[in-house]
Image 1 (cartoon, rainbow, N blue to C red):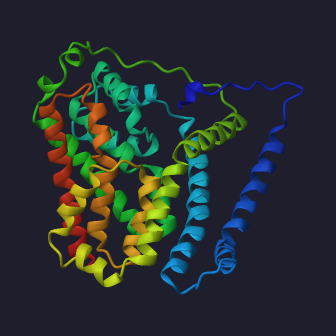
Image 2 (cartoon, helix red, strand yellow; image 1 turned 135 degrees about the vertical axis):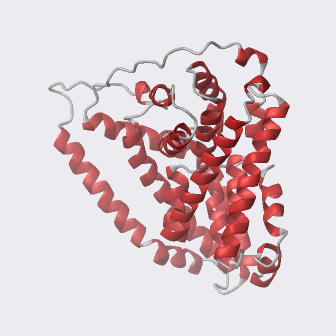
Image 3 (cartoon, rainbow, N blue to C red; image 1 turned 180 degrees about the horizontal axis):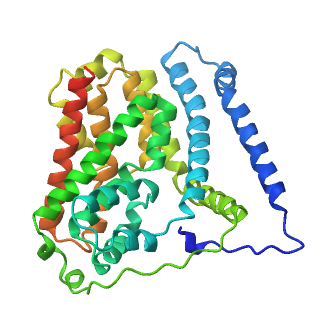
Length: 355
């Protein structure tokens, strides 16, 4: 969804006044806050209704599931709505126009930063890649954007903040941007434009598209945020529930000592193993973060856990298959090697700093 796809709602005598929209928004936010504050007692009440011992493995798993499912969905809806309003000021075309003509270095930094605000999923990778190449954006700058957009976006940061705290979220932001900027810069320095698919190399770089200013009112932007919630939450909720179910099983049934032995900081091989396990998986940030929460709660090392999360989001096998349409196998191998090296470095460094 982009800002250009929203319907402009012109004011007319039958339209809802702006103050009613603002009042309704305020009431919805207040209701959200009250409901969020009641999640713990409601989840405990639901478990008490079942013929299950609360302190048993199943009781722990059910309590985790009943609490985290509404919590993650509510956080996701709030974050997506807020960033949907922000994203009404952006679009893929505007992003290409802002990056066109930027040199490597500054261009990589700008591309990674824009990736946070314009979190296009892997299904958008091919048209975005083609658009960036045709706009004359350097290959390395393009990769910085494509790495940051799915991995270091507002959903990942918001959910990390809400579930495991601001320190982890801020650290993840810093290192995630570092991976996107460094990996894009490294790929750019290798001068691998010749390793694109032949039909992509034939695209002629043109001038950046001039984007006219949208005539959007604040009410239009609220509507855009609501549309974003319906679109994004509607597409990812099943992955979220699946991720929470997996997290609940880990939380309820996996012994903490076993998790520390497998994914603890003392197990040097845990970081590369986590990356290798994460690559074949297919989910998004919202789906994998409940698993991250459960792993950390069981004593898994922070670096190992975040390396797993990064590999699932940034190096998923389905995304590699999609990118095969525009990249040769050699360029995909370089992309995986460079990004994978950055993720491994982050994992080892986190484990060393937070041991």
